[in-house]
Amino acid sequence: MIIARSRPLEFLRQVRQEVSKVTWPTRKETIISTIMVVIMVVIMAVFFLLVDQVLSIGIRAILGLGG
Image 1 (tube, helix red, strand yellow):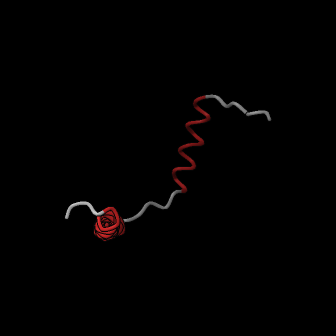
Image 2 (cartoon, helix red, strand yellow):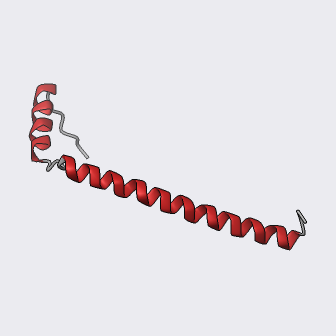
Image 3 (cartoon, helix red, strand yellow):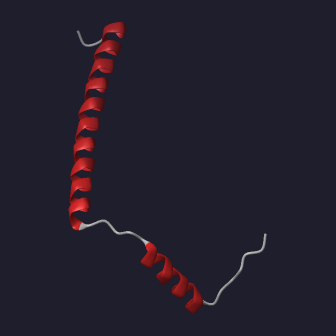
């Protein structure tokens, strides 16, 4: 496989051309996406906390520890 090498200025021109094709999100879309990510992180943290507690109680019951 042969990799074509271009000059640094040509490379920068191509990068600029590709970046101009990108559809950037609006400020509102970014804020909404960020809020959704934070909400999902909180939901998953609570879920894993509950699963961890249930498994912990189950393991203690099986092994007879802590009580």
